[in-house]
Length: 159
Image (cartoon, rainbow, N blue to C red; front, side):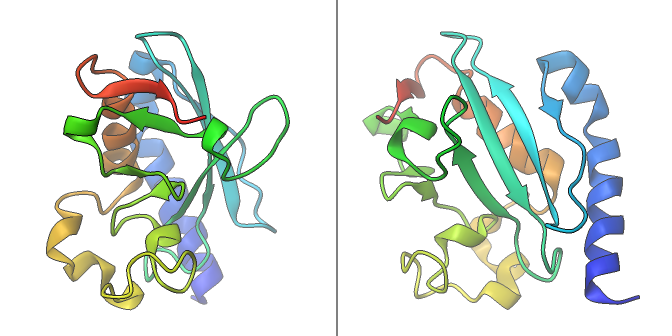
């Protein structure tokens, strides 16, 4: 299989693995745009009912991490501070004020895309000790959702 087919088959399988959480937490996963190798996930904070639209690009996945980008729902603007959740200072770091998801499971955090982590190797992302268990869609969505669902961690929108 070529890398585009591998990425599609992998992400389709991982989306199926998310179905129970989609029902439990009301996550809404869009249809896959096969040409663009992307889809979106709508997440709602149970704390303040703020809606967050996460666009996921799976080009060359799982060789590379997913490209994770929040999008303003009302304007479609990608990557603005208004699109991103904000964490409390005590629990900060995951949602970087650049803004991006600052984690080895987020391709945008790498030097090639944002310049943030020049010390991370995109092709060895799963071997990065900081990746912990965030090596598939379900664990990544769980990590994001937990940060908009816990009162002590979540602090509304960045912008």
